[in-house]
Amino acid sequence: GNSVTQMEGPVTLSEEAFLTINCTYTATGYPSLFWYVQYPGEGLQLLLKATKADDKGSNKGFEATYRKETTSFHLEKGSVQVSDSAVYFCALTLNYGGSQGNLIFGKGTKLSVKP
Amino acid sequence: GAGVSQSPSNKVTEKGKDVELRCDPISGHTALYWYRQSLGQGLEFLIYFQGNSAPDKSGLPSDRFSAERTGGSVSTLTIQRTQQEDSAVYLCASSPTRGTGDNSPLHFGNGTRLTVT
Image (cartoon, rainbow over all chains, first blue to last red; front, side):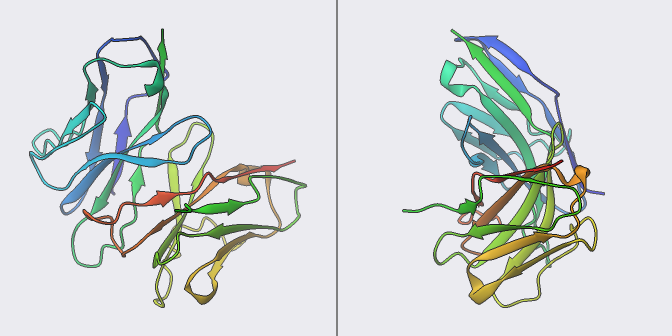
């Protein structure tokens, strides 16, 4: 079946540290890949996306590259800030006829950044 | 503009009672989704509405769960005879089109936290 696996948290980093949150997927067809972020007390919001192999999604200093050969979409940021503290969800949706846009999510990774 | 609105934000109910959760999507969004977020789990797809088409109910965990969307706008998720394992955050999302393509990301509400005692 289709699924998303992401590294378990919580992840605790100091400000300005390098961040990687691993995400791998299993999917039939050709998925689009997403990272959503949930800040404390807020709803989920799209952080970045990539719709085909080798695409790189980027936003707010975060990046993720769609790697079909390793079925991965790891999230990276070179220098995290306290304001990046949130829960990050990797997700996929399938892009073939009949797709209804259901997002399949990973379990989420909580990131805490200390000053 | 206004985002996706869900009510109530918190609901505590006794086991065996019925509950109704409400979602007001962004005006003009034709697609509406319900997800469930349990502690330590990812987001579990429940049901999807797109315009006037028959909803995709494939994610509903049991026949105690049902949802409707009146007039293509507001949606209500109903859980009958609640059980403790129903405790979770129920999230609603809307999208202007049926897919999650380049121009139609999902917009999520803040969720309803349901606690069944």
